[in-house]
Length: 288
Ligand code: NAD
Image (cartoon, rainbow, N blue to C red; front, side, top):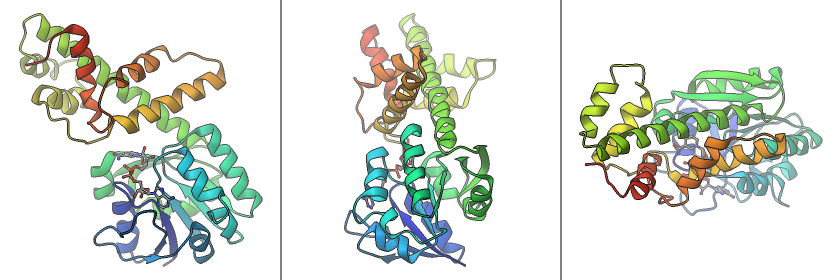
């Protein structure tokens, strides 16, 4: 059993850390909000540097790139307290390009780095069924694997360069966003033409257009159940990261850009299936 640093005990991080604790690992953390999540036994230290000096493995599950930068690189950050040979596992969804810079800073301080973002949502975090996509050296992946197996199921080393896990996660987010946009566009079209969208969805679920998004998000669109789920604001952040990466590669992601623009007129705290409301406004027609 190990002492594990875990920083970022939010909607995803809290259940993930609970699985590590249930397996017998000792959790040390630091908080930017006052309280530990319910049901998690953990030692709370004052700074990320103190967490890093207490633990040989530090897991991060933070909202966005600037949060990871702050926790790793500020004066009292993880890098400042890193033990020689320590492993940092960043499970947040952040910028692949910045990930390479963070990994270099961790390596310069004598540690190793694995990016290991996840998909599967809060339900996947609670049930330890997350898909985990990792980027880093094979030895670091193998070292992390027993811990990752406590939090997820489909665990893949995508590539040996740091950032490849993040690239894979952004590919996931492109596919999901464009699926949501396609389902929304099709349902608004059919409804505007006089069809019952619930019947259209039921008919299409039996054919080649069937998908998890048509099943789950299509139902949310029809029932107007837009409580998250996965927050629009997080998905928009992920598409912005994909567009930044594409720009640095000198390539276009035309439909990702369009989906990201539609998200601009949606509520950031709604479920991402509420993207349908942007198309409803443009069609001057609501489903129903
Ligand atoms: P969240 O906002 O619920 O949790 C983030 C946590 O980090 C919060 O508890 C916050 O207090 C903590 N935090 C922020 N800065 C900190 C600091 N300086 N020190 C200590 N703690 C700090 O977000 P979430 O939904 O858990 O998402 C986390 C990451 O996982 C994001 O990158 C997100 O894109 C990704 N993700 C989320 C989902 C989902 O369904 N929510 C699914 C897959 C991936």
